Image (cartoon, rainbow, N blue to C red; front, side, top):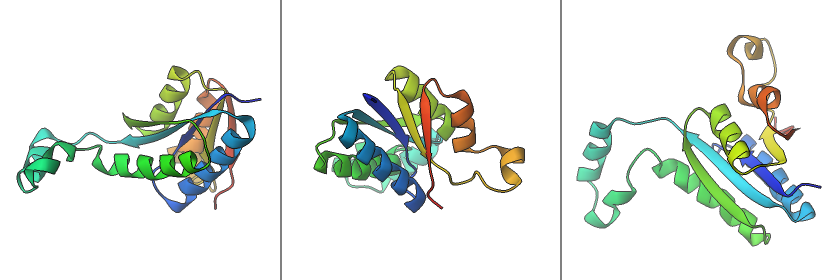
Amino acid sequence: MFTRIVVGTDGSETAAEAVHQAIDLAKLAGAQLSIVSAYAPVSKRRVQGEQKGAPADVQYEIGPREDVNLVLEAAAAEARKEGIEVQTHPVEADPTEAILNVAEQTKADLIVVGNKGMTGARRYLLGSVPNNVSHHAPCSVIIVRTT
């Protein structure tokens, strides 16, 4: 079956459903789970400005990964409750690239993504994370119906 599963999340309700399904699959298969969340780069000036107003003991936590780390830790906590071995991956990239890169790095044999963004004509014009992941994945992909 599967030994290394990758799932992407942005903290949304639909992504949470994909994470739940990935946790269930990892539990059934006894697989390791890698949870990925992408973030966009933020200017150094903005980060420094936000750090100035924060207490000294938390300044080091302020940065472009701050929100992503919270999302990842919440998802990882759910997996740990189920006894799953889990790693988190905050990645500065677009979501598709982040998921595919982590899948390659971890030698994943399954990627789990939600179907959000795969309906209607927009997917043909703009593309979507599940659509792009399914076409470029180095392994099997399960697209979870989340909408």
